[in-house]
Amino acid sequence: MKVFQVLFLVVLIIPFAEIYLLLEVGSIIGAFPTIFLVVFTAALGAWLLRQQGFATFRRFQENLAQGMIPAYEMIEGPIILLGGALLLTPGFITDILGFACLFPPLRKKIAQYVIENHLIQAGGIFQQEKAAETNVLEGEFRKED
Image 1 (cartoon, rainbow, N blue to C red):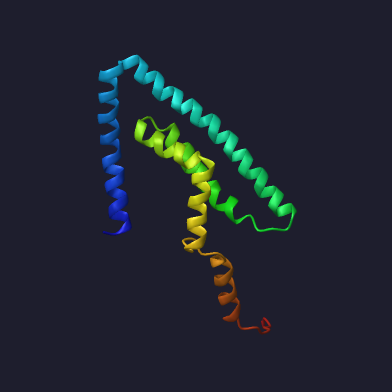
Image 2: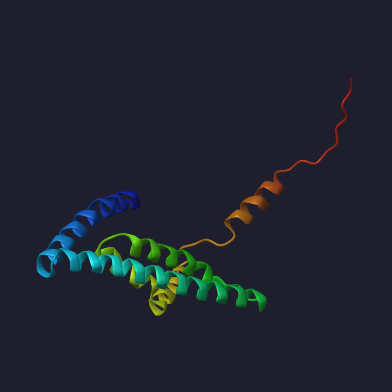
């Protein structure tokens, strides 16, 4: 299967699974506790997002100040953003995935996997600019009336 087909299936299946799980939990513990639990996880997720985001940004600045490349922090930033978005989405499955993205040891392992397997290509923009520079012809022109 192609990536877009898998992504389409995930986007299609997750809401149905979330609704089913919310109904099941609601039938076991009741409607108001379920709603409270969903709102509580969203509030906790927003707090964790803020805390982890500031901590990662601080490490990013410290690495830059020391002259080191903040590779892990650049990868962890989008993972934190994804985790925050998942936690603000109502549902228990997305909450579990969101908390996993905001859990520092797991997030570090994901960033390490991305860096070691070269899933993100560094310098792609700069390589395109260098290629464009080699195709430049220099010269002079004069406008004649």
